[in-house]
Amino acid sequence: MPTAAQIVAQRLYDAGVRHAFGIPGGEVLTLMQAMDRAGIRIRLCKHEGAGGFMAEGLHYMTGGPTVLFATLGPGAANAANAIVNADQERVPLIFLTGCMDPADTPTYTHQVFDHGAVFRPVTRASIMLQDGAVA
Image (cartoon, rainbow, N blue to C red; front, top):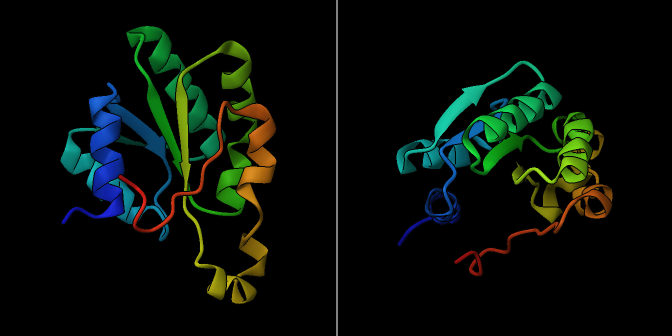
């Protein structure tokens, strides 16, 4: 049975995604590995915002959708400027972040905020995947 990360990675590949930009971190390592195995090339960057603009530039070169990934908290927040720009420019940028099990959030308060609340106004959709309902 495929994992949630494998399902997401394959769906992204099937949708035409061939490149993903971001910074590795604990919450996205499994997803990065799944994207790599699905045939999506991982492009590391030094800042999530820069990765978002790199993804946007690649879209203009290829016409295809791209992915930006970030860890939760500060990683996701760093991407905000690029996400807003992609929305305004109508760039098909898919932004994926890590998340924390709700039971663990009290011990990680400096890294946890409501990603949906921040990104919902500047994205077409903001969705949190639920275990067992990914496919």
